Length: 462
Image (cartoon, rainbow, N blue to C red; front, side, top):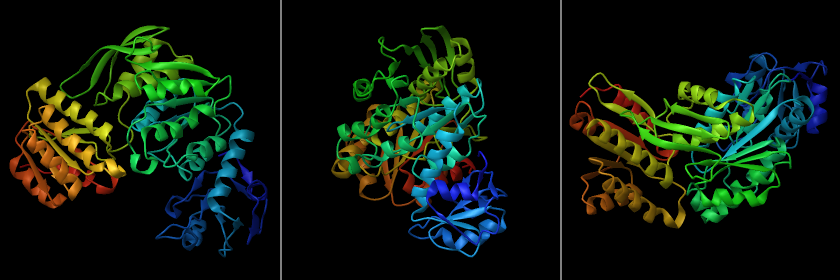
């Protein structure tokens, strides 16, 4: 973080200093919202949640070295007292972007699926052309974005920000804090359909990231998604399309998946063509990597350099098509970070391709997909039928009614499917039935936390 005195922090946030013996003391390290992450020079955000109030940990943060606390009331240690901590953090981050990062290019990324993987790939490529700071994990909301911004310094060349949305206006608010020069939209799917009500409403929300661009900016849009492609009309900025479509400026041809589910393809760009061999599993990584390539080309990298860097990119964020193989040859694909109908279909397609490529038996272990509203039953039944149509050998579903809907639809379509109430029961069944060489996909919405099952399977030999 670019150093700011506590006096300056108070001025920017509209706050008042309390219990501050030395107002000129500098904040030199990024914002933190966990007192255990505080270090000398950081500023602790005392956020009040449903279960935990950060004000209770203010003393701990300062003892760990935090310069001060951003709080809504005096806490007995140096603090900047504000009306609302999140609003104040946003104001501080906006000040840092506008006043302290004049030579930093802000790249903003959103989409219903793939935005975290795309963010990781963009950061990997851009780091080859200069110091790059990117969103950690999926800290893509009004808390995570100011924290990420605060990690940048005047020497940061690229600031790569993942932006999520649960309501109209969420992305607009984030782009006000950190106005992008490059905006990327991966796709418009059915994630959070229950909250938005329709895909058109999701597209309206995601497109706010494009509307935030200046005229001299760049919109990187998915040519294969009609709702994303249509966002070109919502900006006066230059548009670059990516995808498999022949109309895409950055596209992939000759796509194949290897026996580990990793895509190989030919990258076609205005700057030339080059072969790409990804280390990341899943066909969905093709559009993700194409979007990253489009951004990197804009930064001045050549097609050969982009292809080489893509081929060296390893998984960064956990539980996203994270593939490991046990000593007995069973491969566990841990894709349990989150799930929606589009991402689940893509993961099932990759599972089926892995099985076909090496003649291996495939097992899908699925939990419910949340936030689908009135379409929940239809969506879950569709996933059951998809698993059957792809030739998955065994389907194990875990949970309540949503899981049962998947199982019943799969069974009606001719797939052997079993419905189980919890992870412990599923683990015991899989311990008894998995065979050497099987490929197992584990996927569900985040709240289901099937990553624990995936990790237990990896450490268990039948």
